[in-house]
Image 1 (cartoon, rainbow, N blue to C red):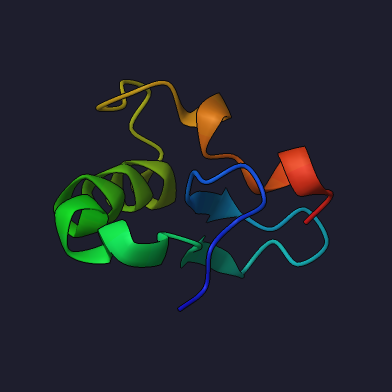
Image 2 (cartoon, rainbow, N blue to C red; image 1 turned 180 degrees about the vertical axis):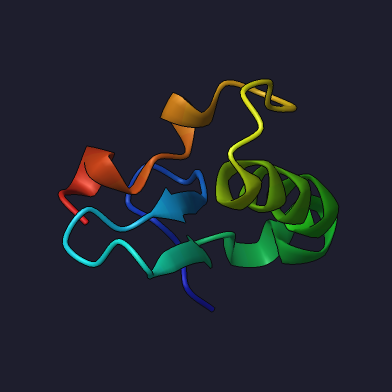
Length: 65
C-alpha cells in the first residue's frame, strides 16, 4: 500500500503537468481518509477558494511533484 514519507497523503495539482491531479499516499488509512481527500481534491480542481483543511499540508510540492 502506498504511503508517503511523512505519513500524510499527497493531494493536489502536479507542478510539472497542470492537467494532472494527485491523490495518493494514504497508507493504511485509505478508507478513513477517502472522503476528506476526495472533498479537498474536488475543491482544488474547481478552484473553490475555501478548502475543508489547509491544502499546504497535503500539497505535492512538499516532495517536488
